Image (cartoon, helix red, strand yellow):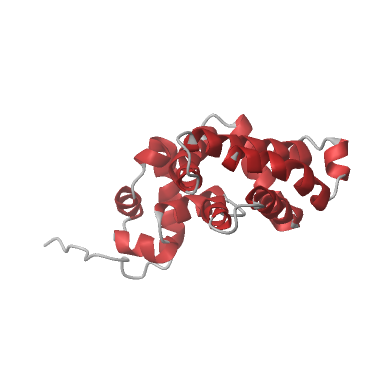
Length: 195
């Protein structure tokens, strides 16, 4: 007689979280961000999909965890944009730079960016995440017919700043203070957002 396993975590399996993370890496790798589903990840990990949600919340949360995102721009930037609009560009630049000034964030953030720039697999995954989770949330906060383009311009400006300061390490940028960079780059981001 064959016994069937019930839903949820298998008996004695204390490694469900690690199995879910491994399954997510496989699913994201094979199907991209958009093609991977929480159900498929749960099936691959041999757990109920409710357990995936219990440990990780949303697909974006799970992806950010397995990709090693040190900060969550998909959560933080839209929240910044819901505040006063007059200095939103400066607040976004300050959020990013102050986050990357923390050694733990910088280490993981640089690692993620390096793999995005050089990796054939990781690049499309992060692009899918940004296209699905970050850029539409920024665009939703911008009242303009070209909101998607504006959101993409903001992302390009911020990505360029991070790469130039923390990966390429251009001397003038690494030597500049956060306040100075906020004052110089913030108005450009502001213009992309609302002007």
